[in-house]
Structure formats: C-alpha cells, structure tokens
Length: 380
Image (cartoon, rainbow, N blue to C red; front, top):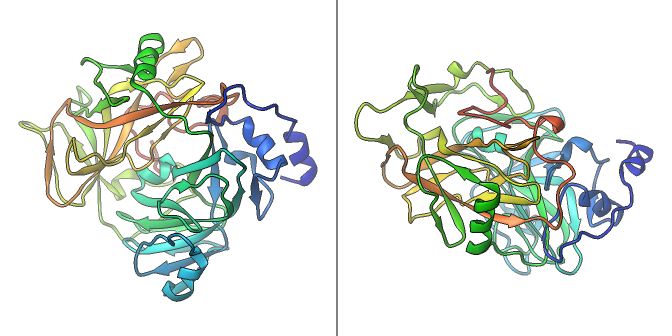
C-alpha cells in the first residue's frame, strides 16, 4: 500500500469507549498513525483482522538447535549470534524442514504506550498445518506475551511438525492482539454472555468453570460417511503456506472414521484434525481463545491457533454458530478420547468497543460456518 493510500485508509480514530479490553480492527488505523505499530515495509490491508493484526515474515530465517527465550536483560539477536546454525534467504521462498526450529525476524515491530500490552498466536491456517509458531520479543520470559510499554522488534519461532513447508518474506503465520489495561474474563461475564447471546449450542449442558466454557469433541461425525476427522501423514512433499485450494488432501491426510467401539486413541505425536460437538458464536464486542494445553482434561494439546474473532459463527440476523476445528496432538503417552468428552476450554474477553470488521464472508474469512475442515491450502 502506497503512503497516499495508507493515509486515505487511516482516518482519525477516537479513543475506544471502554477503559480496558482487546482493541478492535478500527483501532489499528490509529495505531499506525501514532507509530505504536511500526513496519519495515508498507502495510498491506489484508493483514487487518476483526480484532488482531497479521504479522509478516521478514527476509531471513535462522535455524537454531533448540527453542529458547531471551530472558530479562537479553535480546533475541544476542542469542542468535551464537545459536544460529544456518541462515536461509526467504526473499523468494525457502523450505523449512519438519521438526527443525527456525527464528524469523518479523516486518512489524511495536512501540507500546502506557497500559498497552499484546498477545500473539498462530493463525488458524498455521495451526491446521501443524506448524508450531510463536512470537518472541526482546527480554521476554514468555512466548506470545508482549510486555506493557514494549518498544522494539518481534520475531517468530517456527517449528513445522507434520509437514515440510515453504514460506517467504511476507508470509503471514502469526497474528497479534493489542490490549489496553488488564481485562480478565469472569464467570459472571461468561454466564451473562451465554444467557444473552448463546455462545455455545450443543446437546449437553454448557460446562462453565473458572470463567471458561468447555468444548467437547465430536466422534459421531457425518451420518453417511462416518468421517470424524483427519490424521496427518508423514510425507516429504512440502506445502507452500501461501497457496490456497492447491493441494489434494489425500496426498497429506488419512481420513479418520467413527470408532466402532470405545473411543479414538491418539498415539503419541500423531496429529489429528477433529471438530467440536458444539457450535460457537462470538459477539462483535468480544473475542475468545482456546486454552491450548490443560492437563486437567488429558495429556494432549488441542487447538494450536487459539484466536476466535468477534463475529465468528454470527449471521447477519443473529446467532447461527460454527463448529470449532480442533488441532489435537497427544503428549508423553497415548490417550483415548470419547465422543462428547471435554477436550478444551474457551476463555472470553471483551473488546474496547465493537469491531467494524466482524469475522465472516464480507472480509474473506476462510472458516465462517465451517464444519470439519482442513486448512485453506487444500481443495475442498
């Protein structure tokens, strides 16, 4: 986007109405004007999501022997100076090997003001490819958590798990949410939302604990095909993260059908795409995250890509609902899950105000009103 086009796209934006919360799409317009988000190259409007911003990979990737955090008083570049084993040029695309760890400088950086902090997460399509992606900042002691008043560059840690992938400068694998204050979900808030907006619809009584809503797995599946999910195959052919509707699912996935008896056994480090039994709808002034790893429900990780945007599952006339696609990997030991078993929990947070860009077909969202679905890279 040219500078002139950027200014036309960036009208003056008033301060949000609520004192704390996640910022909606329209706030990012002002953030660019105020240089709270800085970019190495011109902004592209496709980066803008209902309550987050897609971050773009820079020109280089550094292969390192292990994941790491810089820690207090240390910068990422300082660690890369002695950890990096190989440098890859991403300008025209490069192959990132399965089970290798890569650190990639991002094109965006931050200059956060008082009471401003940020959180990051993989994009949905990244998670559905079983690409483990996290954001790191200087002096950080946590992944995906950007401290209040942080000023500096950002990096992505990328670990392809099931597939080799091809990525390039400008590829969007992670996204960022900026917050004002410290909004905390409460059980009362969630119960009020469930009552008024019917966040979750399903056969079972809604399970709300610690301010989070339980999500269960559907192992009944399609009544005709009995399809309940997909299991990733270990193949050498790479997947280009920027191609849409390009690949034949049969080349990369095995279908998983309804278990004849008992449940579905998740073998250690096998990756599954499954779906929730419930449908979910997120109001335009709220957003949600799936808690990725909760040992209280089992030794597995569910939903690598945890952002549920405002407007997800909402029709123009009100609630409709969409299933959550679950990205599931067992850890340590094989684990059996059964139909209707709670496999994760959604945590809800409010926005500072309603988004002017709700999730849906109007902004080209890939998974509105979805059922069980692979990532956008595969032919439907």
